[in-house]
Amino acid sequence: MDRKITDILPPKEIKKEEVKKPVLEEEIKPKFRKIRTRPPVLFSKSGLIFIFFIIILVGFFSFSTLSKANIDIWPKTDFLILRTEIKVDKNVEEPNFVEKIIPGEIFEKEKTVTENFPVSGKSLKEEKAQGIIRVYNAYSTQPQVFIATTRFVSTDGKTFRTPTKITIPGGHYEGGEFVPGEIDIKVVADEAGPEYNIGPTTFSVPGLAGTDRYTKFYAKSFEPITGGLREEVSKVTEDDLKEAESVLTKKAQQETEVALRNELQSEEISKEFDFLEEAIITKVVESFALVKPGDEVEDFNFQVKAKSQTIIFKKNDLRDFAKKYILSQISENADQKIYEESLKINIKPETVNLEKGEITLSLEISTKIYPDIAISELKNVLRGKTMLETKVYLENQPEILRAKIRFWPFWVKKIPENPDKIRFKLNID
Image (cartoon, rainbow, N blue to C red; front, top):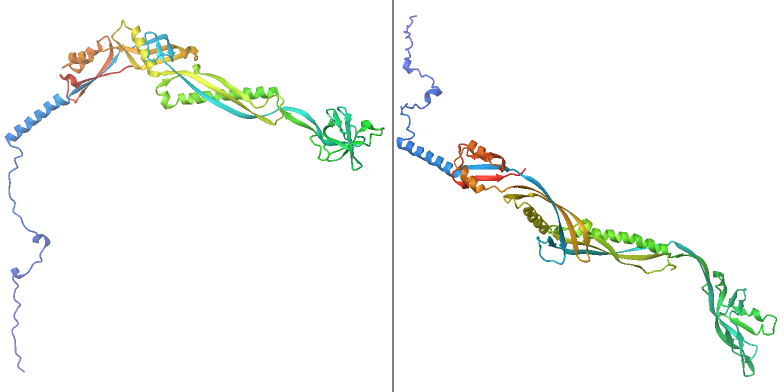
């Protein structure tokens, strides 16, 4: 069998450019052209000159306007103690420092204290019963006289007496029948005690016993006889009243003085006025009780009224006097000044007469004094000086103890020419 032979052709070569390479991420980024540029010119020559000019102006402005010198100085001081007296008088209206008198005002407070006190006295109280009885005369038509203290005895044997003489009317006849005479009289028990408090009963007259009149004179009571007692009762004594007065006097005085001080120490008064504890005078103006010794009560009320008084004066009046007095004592050193923060005044009363409205005060005045330094002259002298020159000059002044100088801003090296830029501060040790 014939076979057909077919040529087998080799495969075609693949051209390199026909092979597609994979696209990388870096290769798809956009490409830029690099452009060379010159460095920028920040300022022109004229700009630099302008900036330099501005810096000079700012510096000049800062130096002339902001510069200043702060100078602390400590002047030499002396400590002064003076003693004198001054009168506070309610009768004057204005201070008279020459005569050493300042005005004062009477300030007072009243308070009434009442308290209940028990009584300490005891006594045996005895009272006789008494009442009204009706005495009958069934003996005759003639009146019968009974003397005072005539006895009447009740059916239970209690004896009573008539305190006064009595006359019993005689009887009379009515329609042939005899009607006894009668009279109501007061009788008092022969002895004290509750056992004589008896009800209505019949009484005989023991003084007539053994006579035919005994049964013809008799008495009856129609109301109870009362008032008889025998018991221990409380009674006011003289000591009770004295003790109550003593306790309340002390209490009233204390409470009145406290009320006075509280009001004097209130802001309204204390900010303007002063007073002295030693010049407060308190006295009792009224004390009484509504009972007297011997009164039979369980307790009683006692009342005391007290009044506290003093003289007050203005703080500024005293302080002004003290300053003027100090200045009068250092007149030969007229250049001295008072350091007011150190001014102290110790006061104590010499005499107190509230009736006249006067107090004489003893004063001890203490203060620091220092030279009156002429600040304006120092400013003129120190203008333009350096810190060292300023310090040396100031500490060579006889009235100055030491000094401290500070310049501002930091580049300032001399005292400003403008006196308003020089600031002084006085420090007192």
